[in-house]
Length: 339
Length: 301
Image 1 (cartoon, chains in turn blue, brown):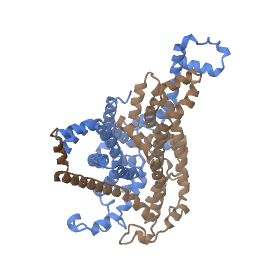
Image 2: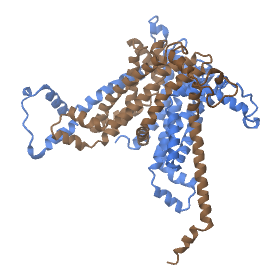
Image 3: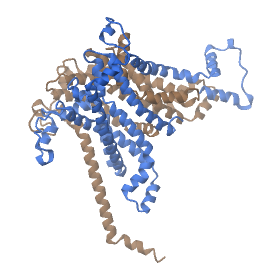
Image 4: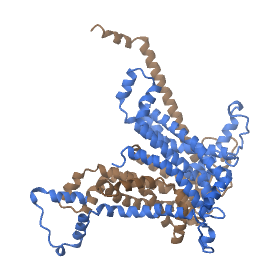
């Protein structure tokens, strides 16, 4: 704004710019405004508060985590009973040597490998469906999806835990009433989903995450579909293309940037799941059910707390996410997000 | 000219009827699939509310019923009375959550509005670097920072304190808020500000009288975003609040209640319902604006 004001003054009509009174005669407010305008510091002033907040709460802690990861920071160091010492890469080597870490890494990666394609395909199919439906039905389905998406994660996780609970849970009851040829011969009545093992717990987590995250993908895909001109489909139709072909030859290429962003966001989100995993696995429950987030939290805040080990894990974790983020930033920049 | 009647004849032929029937069948099956998807999606929420109204013998009955046969408010009165969780009435935690959330929204909105004006209205050095920094920073997982934040806020004496949460939440909301708001600021025509400047309005006056009302829809959209982030936030509150029960926010209260074990599903579902319903009602009201804003952000990157 200060820029525009200045431009107007200098280009102002018919040289009507009044002569400036001497500095002393002007009120201090005007002097400050003049200083800001002359030195072009307005954008920096506007930016300063937000930048300070981001720097202090997001960037500085990141630096600290890097430092902690090379230290033996634990409870004695926190209380001052023992000095903080630099331990080199010891936190990293002991992490990689820990079989629990390998289990947590495996859980996290396998979960992401299953859930990411699942949410993307389900979300895309529902987005395509929404595009085909009449106005009222589309509004109904998207309202239902919005409600699932808007349910707070904590409430959603507690709710799914209850649905899959062995005592009075609806899922076990339903499965126990189903014929054996359909659901196998497992004794489903009072089947324990959350403490039986990682596979069972992650099945519940999978359904929960699918339920909360398909709506965003569906709505985004729908918005993307609306931007594709109908003429392209008409042309493809005249050329005798099937629906399958139309999707892969018209829709998919045009929506590729959107799909890419959705893919990267899903990978990041599904890698980061903490809240729902904490509740579904009943932290601090079975260590075999930890994902990387839970494992890191357990190392840092479990007993005995080791902020150094936790820091090393946070760094490994952030590095994995950063690789994906670089892809996200590159695709954003390529789409002209910085203009 | 003689060709014209032929397609006319074709439209009334049995082939057209078959075509129309196939079309109708397709519409019916699409609507059927859509209906099933919507009902399956809604079912967990329905089940939560239904359980909340059931007396305990119905909750643990061998044949669960969809709707409570003898609906009761007992679960809700236990949650509101505080007997169920043992750490206080849900109103206490509701008040905590609400004050944290509102303070977060106010601070984050103000700071991100100022920053987005800088980014959208000025060309300056580091502008692109700042934008890229925002993109990267919004991707830093909260879990990665929680250790350092815990130790810092411990030193500052801000653990077990709602103010500490507000500081973290407001800062965490900034990157996305600035990113979203800058598009809204960019759509306000510069000419309006220039006209006001010609009329002699000062820069702050232009900001508050011209720009602020015009980006109000954008501010509402970003406020919804920061509201939801703060209302749902889990790991920071879990770590910071520790055993200070009276400072718990709603998600931590529900988690504590849930983690206490024992079969309290009626009251737990009542508490979850009371936690969830305000958000759901709110979202249904602001729906159009929200979906538009979110998608605009996502599609643009």
